[in-house]
Image (cartoon, rainbow, N blue to C red):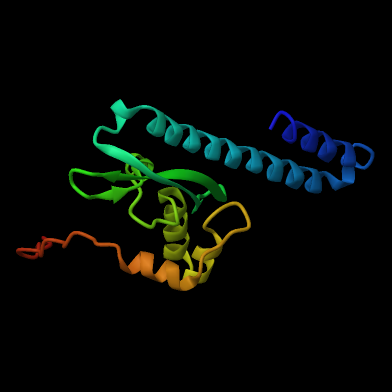
Length: 170
């Protein structure tokens, strides 16, 4: 970010210093650059956790490195792309991404909990299509079918039936 991000922000500001009537465009440009910064910081943070898991055997007792994979995850900020390590436990025969377990992600997750919350919130208020469009502040979106599947997968506790009706005094 120090190399590219600051330079890009300076360019955004310099484009609009002569004509302040384009203030909305300046705000939009700044928003895009700050969003890129946030996404890159999240990617770097996740990769540093994964590197720590690779380097410190005491954190992953019984787990051995199988391979390094690149993955994408849709967040409420936008799509992140990062590397994570696939581990193998020779005692149990199990394979998994330990980083996913630390993050609380289900296997094959493609959307983060915060992005899913945005989808469900919008879908509850309007439509599946709008929920999919509202998944992140970036330009990414998910299909209305994905929104429908997420919504239908929710389970709610059953309500206790009313034992007797209350009577209103006259």
